[in-house]
Length: 415
View 1 (cartoon, rainbow, N blue to C red):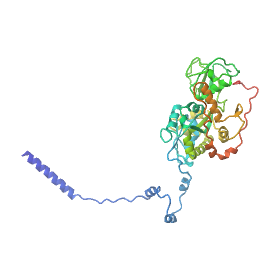
View 2: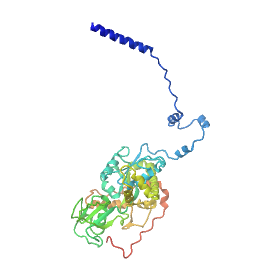
View 3: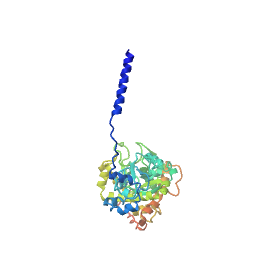
């Protein structure tokens, strides 16, 4: 009896469902017409060349379209990726780019670039990014670092055949050589035996080795350590640590503010990228030069703008760090790349160029035991992007020769 009741109930529900479905009213669906602006946006990529009839009926283009036409077509089908070891080394690129990513109306956009700028945490991070390449979101096409850091890492990335394509600036006071007492380098041959130098920064290490070598202490007699309370010298990079031991060297002997052409800040890229994307590298140099010009016009405003980026230092700290580097200018860079002759500054009988400094840094680090292979020949410097970006610079006059110090000047280093 119960089974029959359940059957009848289900049958009644099924009949009701069929009745509701059959008697339901249905409204016809009408596709809405697209808005005019949507039609234009959808058609823009396809209709690159207007037809004759369309061009005859078209109205004059608005002023905004003419402004947008000033931007060059992208030179790469992906973002150009740049990494720097510090924020101040990427300052001009950040100004030209309008930030880490390319802003509309920026100088890099006008040069046909979509640039992504980042700051690395360590020198090994820069090596890893160059090894990945710019096609990887975590890689880089171009890296900016001090020349000694590039020399120290060259053996690890030699397979990329990295080339120096641009001089971002010169280090000015970032590297400091401290001694136990004043005037340790002021007397020729004052240092005898062997010396222990505390240093972990490649640029500061090169400053110490160069100064000691000039003073008669070859790098083969210098022991480089990461930490020692009994060290005779300490080669550090600003900002200097405040918690140094009381018996650590504290007398300033020499800085790169005196050795103004010892540590260039260079942009490097793999040879394959430089040769395969010559127009891109040339456009980057032009945008960088324009960014440096804008930076010089209003340094505080640039420091505030950069400080707004995620992970950037405060504006006051940014201003201090910008003071640790000097802008080379086109003529100075042309000389340093070997494109222009000059007798303004020489090492021995040769003018100071990045190629000469690369070879000197390599020899110093090799004699100190930090490198093992012979000096690469020729030096990994490619001045062709600079020559293409600024062809008129080849006729620029060289800077004035360095004026020797007066008789009463304090001797920092006796050679």
